[in-house]
Image (cartoon, rainbow, N blue to C red; front, side, top):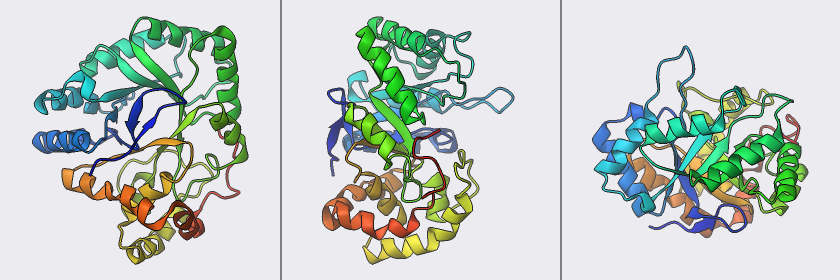
Length: 315
């Protein structure tokens, strides 16, 4: 099957409603299997690949982004066949410039530009939004990026940086990557983000499986736990599997299908470690069409774990 395409932002790049992440993925796979996975994804209409530089000081090196460049060559893909999304981190900004980070990321991925860059979590109160907007505009003018977005920012911070971009006549944030799943809904479904999406900023759903916890799996590195609800999520996995089974679906398909029902969602980011797993997960699109968005949302309502546990304004 070929999945539908949606725009990043109001009038940006077209991409498939599903996209693939690389965090702790390709360096766990047989290389030939990884190439088959990539080719299967592109043939199915998945064109956006998150290949951020995820290595941390003092931690073992991570090479999924470097492997991605080799996978592209082995799969016979042209640069125009896929969109590359890179991460830029703000912890060391502005001492560590966005340009230096991006040039390193592009070198590792073996490309001349990123179609999308996502700014990492906003952990400081003194980040200069005006300088950020100017730096990103410079990167775009240099042909190094095409669009940009943010990862797990608050609704207020996104509105603030968007206002600056409009005032400066510069490109603003096109997409917000947010934790969004049957368990974590309070922020993307909340009132504060309605005003963000109304500005034309679209949603990229991430952490949709809670690192495998929603699928009854464990043992993988998992991200932050806003609201301290992860145990509640783990405890709900068996019941979620029963609901999926009643629909003739897998838990993964149900989790993915739910995210596709959000009206602002451009694309849902997830990981897969085999072409078979990927092909199975593509059926989430058919599940939405078969069951209906409203019915799906009602069925998974009991699994909303972060209801009243986090501020819908976001981090």
